[in-house]
Image 1 (cartoon, rainbow, N blue to C red):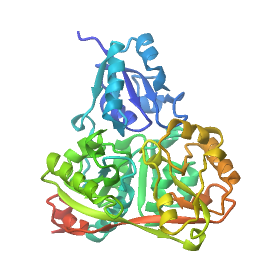
Image 2 (cartoon, rainbow, N blue to C red; image 1 turned 180 degrees about the horizontal axis):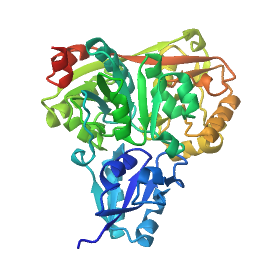
Image 3 (cartoon, helix red, strand yellow; image 1 turned 135 degrees about the vertical axis):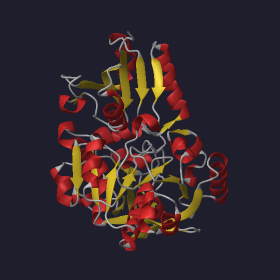
Amino acid sequence: MTSVVRTVIMGAAGRDFHNFNIYFRDNAQYDVVAFTATQIPGIEGRTYPPRLSGPRYPNGIPILPEEDLPRIIREKVVDLVVLAYSDLSYDDVMHKASLILACGADFRLMGLKSTLLESSLPVVSVCAVRTGAGKSTVSRSVSLSLKKLVGRVVVVRHPMPYGNLEKEVCQRFAKYEDMDLNECTIEEREEYEPHIDMGNVVYAGVDYEKILREAEKEADVILWDGGNNDLPFYKPDLQIVVVDPLRAGHELRYYPGEANLRMADVVIINKVDTAAPENVERVRQNIKKVRPEAMVVEAASDIYVEDESLIRGKRVVAIEDGPTVTHGEMKEGVGAIAARKFGARQLIDPRPYAVGSIKGIYEKYRHLGQVLPAMGYGEKQIRELERTIATIDCESFVLGTPIDLRRILKVPKPAVRVRYEIRETTKPKLDEILRSVPMRVTRKLC
């Protein structure tokens, strides 16, 4: 008999749990002895509960810090380590692989054949090659088009189960109160709230087969709204992938963003209004090299502010979307861009005012510019962000986050929200593509 493969799954509370649920949970060839966790503060030290891990794991599965991986491999006699999280440079992937191989275990990446679920409905997937490419604005635009073309659109968002996993098996968000009831983090609210504002129902959670079956009950089409640069969980009829010329070349240097690009039906080159022309051209050539059959749409990210008088001539602080400027490796976001565009007198450096884990963010992500990441992966961190904001010497805050932070924390000085929307600058437009591409969505329309 073949011996059972003792396995560790490396993750960040998302893809790791999905791969386990779909492939490992009922597979007697494998014994998953631990998950490891990174990227997201405070998600290690939990247990993947028996309700989710199934009868083969009556005590659940421990979730341990990734930095302890060599010890875990040694003490638990691990045979295989599976990498199951996203937005890693190829250098990072191979450094992790080399560490695992040096510890004596095998290293594995899992593909779509092992991890995709099929829907009874059409699925349109929106993914990206990097965090912060502008995927959320594309998702919202696609949802509007699909509503006009098909009817009921239900959005399924890539997982962000940062709290009590047993309470987050299958979550449905249709109004603000649903986010309050589920004690959503800032990062979750940033993804759900803009869809709710548009009247979209959003599903998320841990068990994505249960989520899919529930979403199918109230939809004519499923819109997969990807996270980071991860691959979709559902088999798409149309795969839309967003690339970012502000980070030209990253589309071929980050895992698994290049895989997304290579399977794209439609590639959207976003931010062409702010990227250097030579970088836009570089991205075009990379698309042509690895996915020449894809339709390419170029788009601008138009910036809007509520009241530019709160920026012009003022000493301001830009508060940015956390994941975009941290593991997305952007020096700054739309808040800082808007501050310059609308004539701020000074962009204040928030570093001297940072407290607690917010101070630690600057120590970990040294590429950050003079911006304040809106980190809020739990109540403690939200309060530390609030304390940081309270002490900054400025005249106003420029909120470059997808949500209005004033709903969940105190902002003691005037604040102006910045939003950006996609504007296609070339043809074909997304509406035309959705009508013409031979998938179940368009066959239903004809």
